[in-house]
Image 1 (spheres, rainbow, N blue to C red):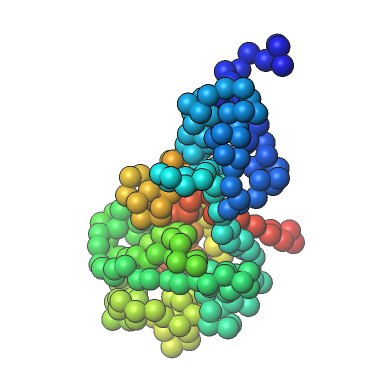
Image 2: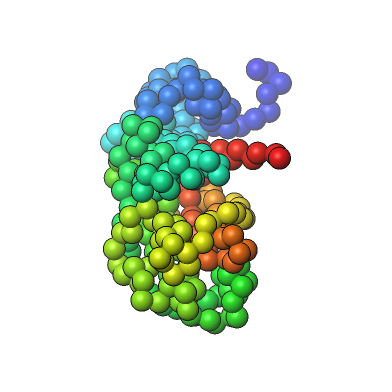
Length: 256
């Protein structure tokens, strides 16, 4: 268009982005080759390459030397958060993440990275109702779907409550720590009645980029979830870091 003042590389990128976001170019599909785009727009491969580089920086496209550029595959996991859903998953002994991923035909895996007792940060202490520096047990895990890293989750637990329990052990707990919390013979013995979640969207740190294989330009969602029991005690804080290009969160809020 004669009145289009956008640089040509920007216009090419805008056109391709529109095709990707509309679904016309599906995840995993090849972009038109540089030669095809060069001829279509009457330009050079250098200009086309600049357009594709822009889409790579936005996390929409992946490419490697000698291979065609692809629309980034997105094995999205839809996480449904409701009280009824939590209770249903809890009763089966299968974690919500594993159950949701499996129900979508995906292959989930959780790996325990480390378990340690550490001083509580200001952030964790305030959510657990502890003094800053009080001892907490931290369980660090990585979640995968089809062998692709999906999220990092650190769980924090008051050491005074959970010392000497399976929370201190570097192994999986059937039904998750929530099952232990609600076990009448466990360290808490109370029903979980409320989750409070704080959501923060930011760019990932270099370590998170490496651990979660996050492409350039993709932000990260940090979700802090605090679990409260019938006595209003805060017994767990989950610190989850989730790349924004591979999850869909759905919250259902029932209004009494």
